[in-house]
Length: 487
Ligand code: GLN
Image (tube, rainbow, N blue to C red; front, side, top):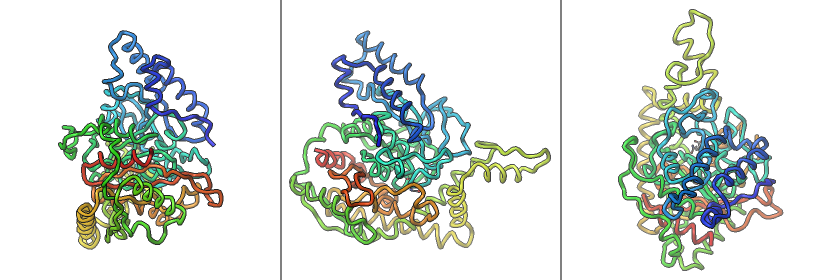
């Protein structure tokens, strides 16, 4: 069990306002917990202690001079960990890979930059599956992060280090990326809240690309209100990302407490079918019943393409990954193998990529190259694109019948380290409830259910997540429903 006492940002902000703590003291508290626990949990791959201290002192100096308004600087003193596939200038950017083990970021990701401009302090870079490919953090070259609630179990992935860092009290909040569930599944496994925004809602500039038409940057924290603050700071168009959206950014926190009276909550029957742990199912149904008691209307709905999600996701994302990862060749970017003089350029590429990438990344590059190759393109890639359109249409249709969908976040409890590593398909199936949101581009929020797993469950005492999915760019309603469930 974790000994760190997680503190919420809201609680620490109140103390900052009252003058009973300082930014520097907050940073020292987090650094102390990291020092005591990170070796065991492996949640952070690098700690930016000196930069964090300097930033904290600068905020304290501003406050002493009367020029820091804690009411208008929305995230002043929020201490955050950043997934190690998001750039923060001058800091390590490993992507959990040997390929980038020595790489340092040359610029700062827009999402990180906007948090820092709002007063947040980056404390470290969080462990993750290699190039964000995985569901357990076990594909990280630097070893897995562990679940703070039970270190023999996985924290989920690929943003496992981000979720574990929040749950262990190494930071107030964290940034992750979600291509097929990588913010939501670890949030569920670690008992924290996590939001995958609508595709395009938050700039991807500075995020190392895995599958560019799926990747989303989003926050993990302890409370829905913190997610709302972070999203508001990060969201909105960015000239550096052509796919970032020009939709206006609402003040997400304002309507959080409006309640759920009259909202239609859809329960998609395909998400409550075979393969779902019955206790997880009970917990999720209990949350639906709570919403009904709060005045929401439960609607039985169907997303018939649900069972095509995993296959479609693994055709399209591997295709995009095989192209995105071509740049890591030991010449333009990444690990360069030491070869004898006279080796050819091809030898150099081959040896560098063979040494630099781990097995899961290689599997996906091969799969992606295959589905894009002449003769197979029509049968796999093009066909998967058509199915992606059908999946999107399913969501369009269902959001005519309801305002928000409520589903399990994962089919099982957090599993034991090592239990799925030899079975890629079993690992891929842990994303069965999350990938469709990325295929359609809709936002998804995961939060812990009210009750943890019972004594007679093989994962007794561990958290269970519930997922809310919403209309494109309607994060506000998701957050509002999430807030009601927290209440
Ligand atoms: N677990 C999924 C995968 O391995 C999702 C990863 C992600 O969202 N980055 O592809």
